[in-house]
Image 1 (cartoon, helix red, strand yellow):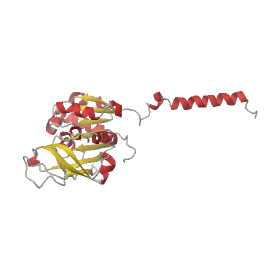
Image 2 (cartoon, rainbow, N blue to C red):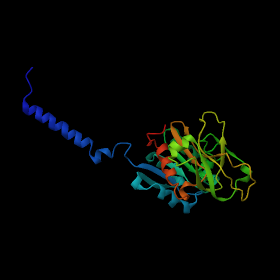
Image 3 (cartoon, one colour):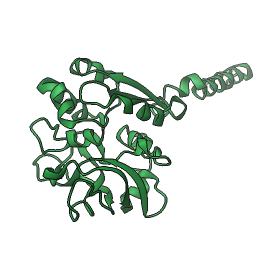
Image 4 (cartoon, one colour):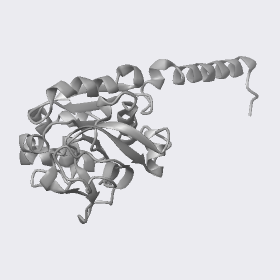
Amino acid sequence: MRPWKLSHLIRIASLEAIAILVLNSPACQAEHPSTKPIRVALYADEGATIKSLPEVINCLPKSDGFDVTKISAEALRGNALDRCDVVIFPGGSGSGEGNALGGDGRNRVREFVKRGGGYIGICAGAYLASIEYPWSLGLLNAHVLDRAHWDRGTGNVTLKIATAGHDTLRADGDSCTIHYENGPLLGPGQKEGVQDYELLASFDSEMTQHAPPGTMKGTTAIARGKFGDGRVFCFSPHPEKTPGQQTFLQAAARWVARRDDQTQ
């Protein structure tokens, strides 16, 4: 075998150096899944409280790696979710959102999550994710407790953060104050084929403007779970309406999109 000429060795070294520069260039790094923006579809149709949509969008800015697009029920029934990583159903009316989707739309959301997509439900969106109602999606194995007193009132409540919540939400301390607007009181369900959810935070105070005391405290306020190959994250209260808690929504989006290496 003939020895390599010095010119050949120099040429090979130069090509290797160029390859390293290309692989580490911003353009190439932008294509890596961990550095691509998280593509979020925000439901903005019948049932959603339109005035709350800017609050959700403001929590997920482009500067922090999010790309949010409003989506209609009609577009959702089509193939719009194929271009997204996460779908968010905001506050409003769970039944309004579920009925606006219709059977085809609800099945489309289920399939999206089952195949690996992420779902976030806030208040009405948490009702929608439950297994409780005919119009529910059944993504989170959770019942809605005390349905007779859904109109509990609005205001700030205290949450008790579970151990898993510290890691996932990046919460400071064992409790926090958060805004509440008649969100569901969630409890474990028993639906076959859907994994049990994980408690991240529970209510540590009660909203009793229009409901008797004694049922809200201790029930699930924030939960996460898995559905098929996808992930589900539900908030009964409103982090997007609470100064200092907006990062909870970012943490949820990163978890359901599998962009948080510190969670499983």
